[in-house]
Image 1 (cartoon, rainbow, N blue to C red):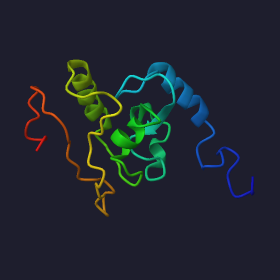
Image 2: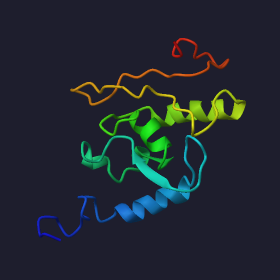
Image 3: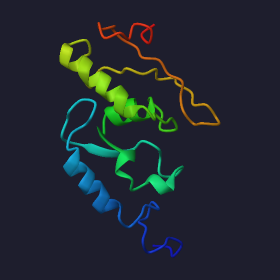
Length: 142
């Protein structure tokens, strides 16, 4: 475009292989891992590619989330500056609670909206909000 990107990258600095890797990931994981939606999907980088470019195409670093609200809620704790390295386990727990009726689905926000990331790790210290189920998470739900 302006000559300052390598030809193997798109306008956002992504690898030329990103489109293929993204489609392959969506074939393997075709629904949001938090709520199960199959539309408006985002292939989320667990470790952001701008901080860990070597993980941009690593399938273990990718997770499918719906664009709204699960990507911002579970992937970023309501702030795109935040990182959730436990997004897979958090979404598994959330999905389990959806199945047993202790959360209502996408309209329920589980994480604190005012989570502030640690300036060194860029990760937020957040707490879960909501009803406690009988799965042993009572300590997290204070």
